[in-house]
Image 1: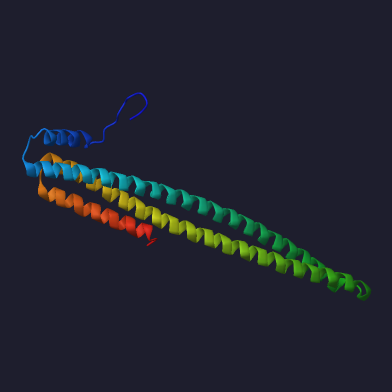
Image 2 (image 1 turned 45 degrees about the horizontal axis):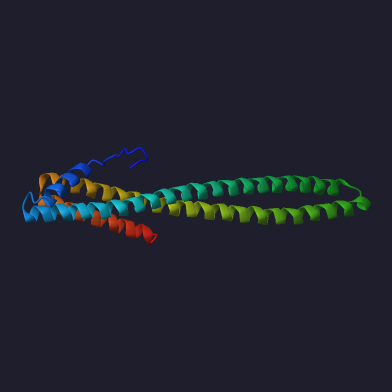
Length: 199
């Protein structure tokens, strides 16, 4: 209900209220009244669980996007390091060429510079490899979060189908629909349990 007094009913809310009102006024038989109360309570509980599952589904989807973004940033940083590594390699190659072409009395300076470039390249390579490993880890975490998101979405969908069965069971008073309602809800809760256990 909003502040202006406007209330939006779900597709089955009116039927639940109508059936509960008839049961409270003594209309219908006792078995029917029990079924109505049972389905009404079940629907409220499953709707609450479904809302929690939907929240978790949204949270894991947001995490997956965030982690994928972190992976992209690390990949960019690693690429920058590899470009820096390549620039050092080019400088080292030029210094080694100059060393080979230089007279003997000038070679020592080129040798020192070539050794410095080799040391810098190794440090840059380690940094680039570390960034690539971090990117891979972020990608893995993103994939795990997307898997969980799909589990939460599957669980939420099953609970929504169960609530639809509840509304139809109230309208038709068919026992098999009530059984289907409980069965599909059980599947939804089980899948939600798998998501909770990160399976």
